[in-house]
Image (cartoon, rainbow, N blue to C red):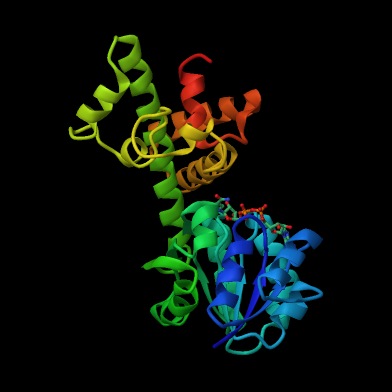
Length: 293
Ligand code: NAD
């Protein structure tokens, strides 16, 4: 079993660190928030006094931080200096591709292996240990990262060289945002045309309009499998986080001159929904905006 430093014990990191400890790893955990540290201690982690203290002597370092600026600051400010030679660094945060590549290159220049390994699955999957990891890095670093990530997830997929995990994550989530909006506006149109929504679901879920946002996460209460729509759009994947990922996708698209009109429209609509004060609702609640509510 490995000695693992875990930095960033928030909604996602708290459950992930707990699962590493549950699998028998010696986890030294650090977060700026006292409450997060107390939860990690309850879950069997050792509490460190700082990020550098957590990293000291660790075989692997996992970070789960809000955004690129936090990742850059924690790696450049503490982790690189404290990491033992041969330690493997795994950043599971969702951040911009350029920062992921820059931090990965800085790790490489110090002789440290690093992967970007963002996740799909949300808080429930983080707690249950059923996340999907998309990993960017060399084949050798991926092989070392895989058993650490497998202790927190159900699937670990090598996406390509450094930055590819973040690229896969934001491409996936751009498609998710656009397909959720298309699904929502379709249900609104179906209702206005007089269709019974359960009947329309039964038809479209078996026809060419079928997609994940419809059949796994239906935005209409009482239709399809249980989803946040059935809980008044509480829990799930916050619209604010969907907006964050769409902004990352737009920045990435601009950097490579890619045309993403559907993604851009999705970003504008989630921005409007957020500006109206609904960023804390599940992202499927955007059906309210499209329905004029
Ligand atoms: P969060 O805000 O709940 O947790 C982030 C944690 O990082 C906080 O506890 C904060 O105190 C800590 N932190 C910030 N700066 C720090 C520092 N310098 N040193 C130590 N700790 C520090 O966020 P979250 O929901 O856990 O998300 C984390 C990442 O996972 C984000 O990049 C997010 O986009 C991504 N993500 C989230 C979800 C989700 O459903 N919440 C799903 C997939 C991916």
